[in-house]
Image (tube, rainbow, N blue to C red):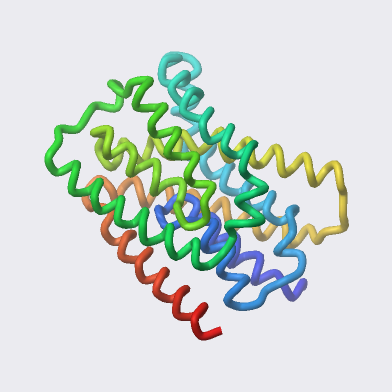
Length: 261
């Protein structure tokens, strides 16, 4: 057995959970190898593609009925998702290389974990004073604002689900509806990243271990599916506060380790 197989499984689980929980997948996938000094094939583009593929499949499996319904019966909502994807897609094309080379820094992650955690708390306070907007009443303006917020998820430590759910709350959606819109919105973005990164892998083929690729893909898919199901049920009853406190605790841990290096 490949000695790195357990690392692939752990990183796949982390990817699946943190891609959909509002705690930042990028932060965790940068920090885990940094903490434990993991190197090798699990830090390659090919492995990243496998993790994105697992997350994408978990979304498609969980929401396939919704996508079929949008295509056959609810073209308006399909259009809203498409429009909301544009800002993040443009940001990814224009700034992805800059973000991945310049901003993958523990201190930047600490800053974003804290600042956007505070924003989540403000959103929670905001919705207590508002009447929820039915999901069917989401407007083009709502979708563009939430989609523009999603573009900020390029920054390590922000979290795609955190920033889009927060934006949804500020647009008077319920927590559950904001989370569901966030997940649906993330599908074309993750698909785009998967296709772009996959094209790079195909154009520059390299030797890689199929067992590591499969382990990362499968663990990301399974943990991602469970994370989606958990969060949608959780937010029907509870606020985002527990995830904010986790973000703050993680920021303290990162800062402590960085200072004592």
